[in-house]
Image (tube, rainbow, N blue to C red):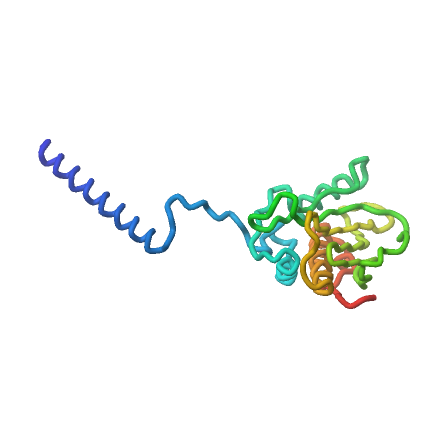
Length: 223
C-alpha cells in the first residue's frame, strides 16, 4: 500500500510541475510577469460613483488631463455621498459646502488633480465673473474657463425642505503646479462639459424638479 501511495504522490507531483511549467510558458508568451503590479485604474465613466461622468464628459476629461485611465475613487468620493451629506445637513448648522470627488489621472502626482465640489448659496448673483470665464446658458448661471467650470442651479426637492428652491453651486477646478496645456477654447468646452455632468448627476441624485433646469447635454455656446 505504501509503495502504491508513493507512486501516486509521485505522479501527482509530476502533474503539478507540468501544469506549473505550462502556466509559466503561457505567462511568458503573453508577456506578463507573475510579479507584475495589478492595474487598479479605471475608465472615466466609472469615476466618482459611476453616475457623475457621462461618456461625453469622459472624452472632455481626456482633453483636460491627456489621460484615459484614472485612479479609482474612494467610497466617500461619489455624487451619492455628497448629495446625502448636503441633504442631511441642509436645514442644520452643518457646513454648507463639501467635496464631491477628486480625479487623478493614472500615475499622476498628488498635486495634479481635478476637484469637484458643491456649495449651498443664497441670495442673488453677486458681481461679474472674471474675464477668463465664458458665460453659458445653463442653470441659474454657468461659467467655464481653460482651468475651471461652475454651474449654479435651483433645486426644489422633498430632500431639501423649504418654501423656496435651494441654490446649489457645483465647481470643477484644476489643482496643479503646471499651466493648462492645449487649446484654450477646447479646454473651456471640456470644463463646461465636465461641470455640467456633475451638476446634472447631483440634481438627479437630489431628485430636483426638472433636473434643476439643466438640459441632458451641456450648452457650450455663450449666453
